[in-house]
Length: 181
Image 1 (cartoon, rainbow, N blue to C red):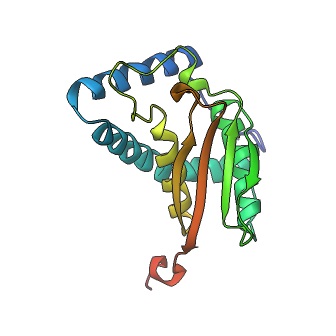
Image 2: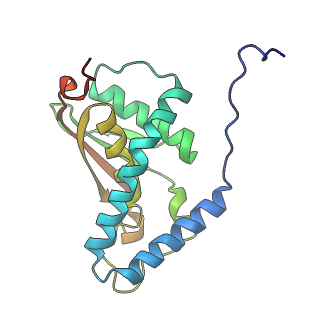
């Protein structure tokens, strides 16, 4: 039997509510396991980094994006394609400096906090969605871009908006990552 021509693979989607509740349970358990918010934030970032290093392959295969030639193109792709593809939202992008290597993603709606009204008592420095920063950082590193990704503002902490800052540090050396023949 022959296969149908040009058939796209089917991707299963997880129920959004199940994902958000599971993520909330994960953060709650980490808060029980670690006394310091910094430890929880670091764990979420590390976990996100691991996800990002693997997720970038899926993203590149499914999105068919072409090679970007500027940091602003990369920031736009992250906001308009990646966030839309995986979280169903499209953050707005702003450039924060003249050298055009610092960008902010402003999330009008953050699906990870849909069922969260406030941070747990005594956890004021917790970055509840720090997983997102790790995912972005890990994915960028896999395409040879070093970046610092942090939450600049968070609605859970009383800020007006949720804002993720991305600072591209330098282009990683591609020769270092090429396979030797």
